[in-house]
Amino acid sequence: MRLIARNVLLAYARAHPETAIPLERWYRLVKAANWTSMDDIRQVAPKAKILNRDRARFEVVGGNYRLIAAFNFRRQVVFVKFIGTHAEYDADVL
Image (cartoon, rainbow, N blue to C red; front, side):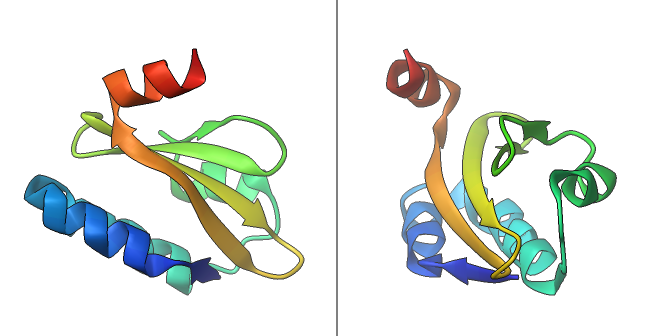
């Protein structure tokens, strides 16, 4: 799959160095993937929370951070919609 705006991950990793390695791992996982549905994501990343038919939430750094990604399976494209701490996620969602 192709990640749109990888620079968002890189910038976040620069600001929060503890996320650099986990975000790079996530990027490599997604880049190598050829997912066609949320079931494919569930098989590869069982801890990922499927939010709806095109969005999933991934825990980063042991769950200290969250990454929300939107998937266009037909075009094989991934968009990072949110990355931040639990508190930032809760404030953004609520």
